[in-house]
Length: 516
Image (cartoon, rainbow, N blue to C red; front, side, top):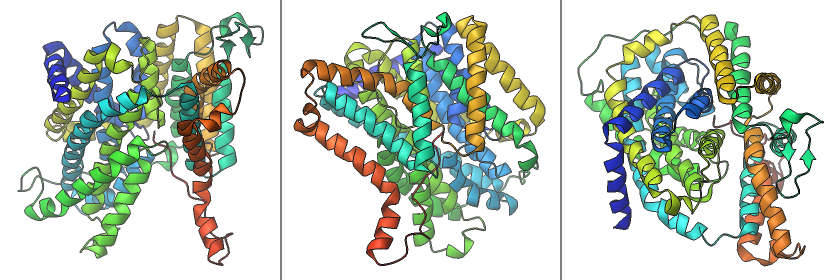
């Protein structure tokens, strides 16, 4: 009952006029930027992250960020359905069937099942977040330094092993992130590390600069370099037809079960290291295709193939918030960007957050319910406006993003050196994307690396340098065992093939796209 009392207090905060305005601004901005071709939630938040330096209200800021995230995911479905250009890998499954529905003159139905499915999944998964957040935070109080070291290592290794097509490339990306995170003064000894005698680097490289460089600059350069390969024709909306919410009775019948199944898959996967939204969306799509009575429609525009993945995508977001808020561990690139936003306000997500800043936590959770309602109320009536946004000339669009990112970094730091560093990191990010190096391990390495090092050294101090503490403490040993398992999971198809006497050379490594 205390949980629901705290949630009611959160609603009391969110329903104040200024915070409702923050929520409305968040979902509108998120949808506006997220609907742009090739742009996902991580880039959207990264682009708007410098804005927080001019805000002095953390509650309003995080309410706005939650709305941006939800809005960006909804905008991604619009781009996938009307333009066949997913802004993130988690929207690929939606594009498979959604674009075919649009080509068959059923764009409104595809957009409606995506929006309503997002609302259903977001509401149910937020309710699960409400119920599980405090118990997990209470459990996290028992964590010691060795446990946090193992947990951070698990998050980084799991993401590195499962995203991208090459483990070696993933490890190189992680190494780059660790390097960027360790630049500056050593927190324990005060010695300069990797500063190369430059005074500007003694304070380290701000995580906002890294994020804006990799996503807002690097990603924009990469998308701009592929402008000629991206489709420019936007599938037009057909005239409105009968049916509640643009869905016929048959559409409702075929959609509501995939919404619930997608939610059931998305939430737990989002809470796992490297789970994110990619795995549950493809699992949902595969399951709906397997059990559908309309198998012949798959690949030609089956509404189940839009309803299930979109529900899984949105449910995964609430799942990602569980380890982020209770343990301070981001399990995706977008969660890492949100962790950076916490650090801007000198807040550290984890079990102490529920005791030190309960008003912020429960206002954030309550805002997820409000944001869901606002998205449904704003986006279905305004769909023609988002179609117009898709028609903005691409050169003007991406040039504007670069200008906005540059101004954002300079406004946040008031230092031209930081702008140059951001562009240097952006150029590295561009070549990483071009040669299929995953970006998520860089962000996790830069954010979790310093924390992992601190907890490792703290453990050694407490144990008088005895490394056996990492295997004698049961929880730490279990987490380190999961690290080894995470490295082996991508190779399970090859291991199983070899055990069955088949050639493993033709079996591909298990890999998923990045949850950007």
